[in-house]
Image 1: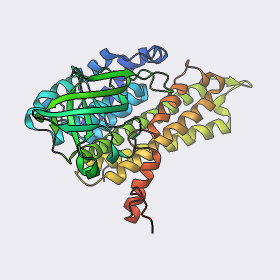
Image 2 (image 1 turned 90 degrees about the vertical axis):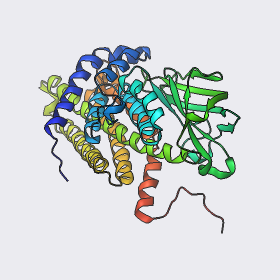
Image 3 (image 1 turned 180 degrees about the vertical axis):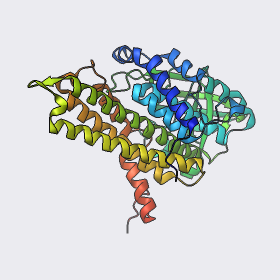
Length: 389
């Protein structure tokens, strides 16, 4: 396994870093304070090719490998997790499933607009009463003469208020459980499709988050992604790729914590010497570096396996679990290094902590990742309902 980046990958990482410095960092604090979603930034992410980066060029993507995609997510995540969320949702949760499961007509219709940033899409799986238990969705899809009628609610949907279409997962027959799930591409301007912005979030304040309501939304037969019964597989494959990009973005948070802490510790003086002279400050910085490097290597391993088209579900869960928890721990340590200054947004570390916290929840909680890893180790699926003896 080669852990050396190619010249092309190094150039992609540098381009992502320069973009983040130029287009994201100057506005990140104001956007966070005001809870403002930057639609223009999303468009620029598409223009430079950072949306749908692994999507084939014939559909508007750049055809990049997954290691390169991870480097993009890392650099954008270092600058702003809200911007990285746009990259992850459009690329992993929406673009990827359409490219893998869609018809040629669906790919040509939706993917170019996604990859260019001209149009945005969202991933409608989670519901008010259903998170990790995706097989028991309450959203229903009823067969009609001309297609399907969809009714239900979706919750915590990133980009839900600003998207042109939503990938909606619905149950066609509750008795079939996961075998009855289907995925539909639903334009957000459809009659009966409404959204409401979710306010008061701890972090990701400049990321759009919505509650979606569908009241007998009519779609044609050509709106289904795959067939009835494919919905569960579509969702799981999307989440697996989403976990990879979230993990990569958390490497960026860890890197940002290290950079900010090193700079502050060298500049800030106490008792007449820089903070960096104190052993326990160096210990905290060293701990952050250990977590950053371990996270980066785990993400790289998952990316290499994806590029080699080898099974990687477990390795991706390992990377997601470790990197997200590491990001929270690094941000907490970084605030400690900064002292009182780390508790206000004059420095990025308090935002890192707020933004990192949700990464241990979405795309499968840390506990779900442990169950995935445990299932791979033991061959026993602990997520199945326990049977009474």
